[in-house]
Image 1 (cartoon, rainbow, N blue to C red):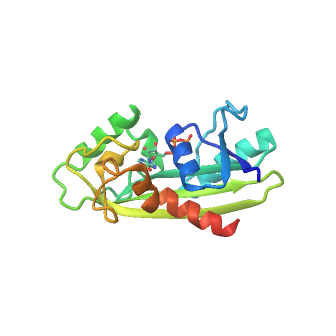
Image 2 (image 1 turned 30 degrees about the vertical axis):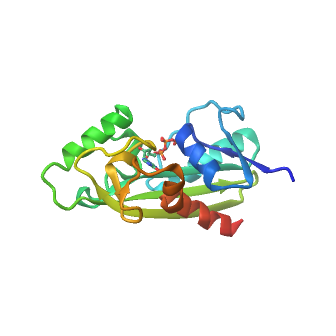
Length: 189
Ligand code: ITT
């Protein structure tokens, strides 16, 4: 049977790959490959709002069903920062973001944190499904492992008892915020 095609409203190749590994049975196409190369202004005030903005923009521009993931790292001691600003935290990409996070946490004992993910599936005509997922852990004093992307090598997972950077893709994809959000979404489909 031919797999159902879904356009992913994201320009983050790591995310798109993880979504494909987690949601078997669907074929995911990046928005760029589907013909969308516009800018999307993520000006929502929550993960959910930003996921809707991304999915709706791409779905309406292309006339197809689109899936968006808005996600980020929330650190308790920092009042939930960087949160929805995770990708733009330092303004200098993933490496700069990790450096800034370590700097802001210097001297803090409480390093508890969670990743959060909101997914939105938007179909032309306005049918909208949302799901969210979280995964808990703490921020390490230094990077461990080089797998994954973003803050993975600084995030020690309570579930895996190692950093996401040290975990295999399969291990991360069994406990991650993205996996949990997509599992919820799958139940709604
Ligand atoms: P799109 O908006 O194009 O999808 P993006 O990377 O800008 O790509 P977000 O706005 O949702 O996506 O920001 C997510 C950021 O949160 C991401 O760039 C990482 O810094 C961090 N992040 C989210 N999920 C992560 C994960 O599984 N592992 C490590 N870092 C993650």
